[in-house]
Length: 235
Image 1: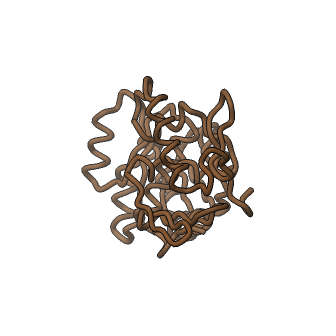
Image 2 (image 1 turned 90 degrees about the vertical axis):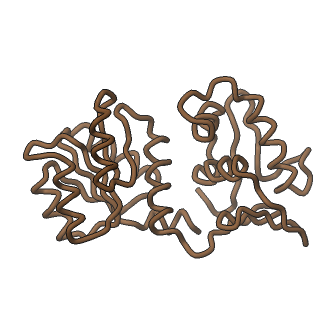
Image 3 (image 1 turned 180 degrees about the vertical axis):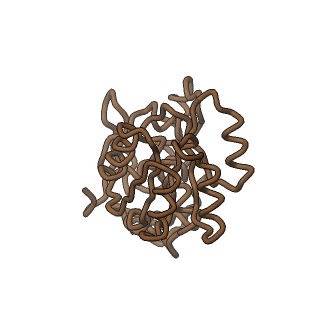
């Protein structure tokens, strides 16, 4: 499975705030990431990189012996490891500087756990995408690489929004994803007013993935909360 492949990647977390560092580690471990290395300074980050050879780094901008930019520059001298920056809300120049240096993404503090996971998955997927991730559902197979659904003898294309919604639901397989979280993931930072659009997209997705869309087995509605994608064998 693609997510199992991505979760096998080793992550380096660098932040000098013990509470934030622990929160990052807990969010990622709860999601299933098991290979996590932590550091609290530029020097510790460089040492951890050489010793552990991580696949992705999440770096705070402000560190006690320098900053995340200098740490990234040092890492990039010897590796093309993807880098995600943590930056405060009012530090717009930090975002621009990080992206200008070649960072793969940035996360503005404070952030929601799901935002962190979405961004980490997106970076890992871009850099380490598995060859042919396909997900078997009760009545169909979703191929995320080709953005297609295989049902019976039919191949059905997914639209960009349908693909994005299914990806979010798949990353949270067998768990409820709230309406707000789905809207925010697909329509951006101001998702209000998209609930009707979401319902329309869910209906069209069911027509593509379910044998009987009026009696769905895979994409379930959890009344008053959101939706859940049921995949056998996933916790």
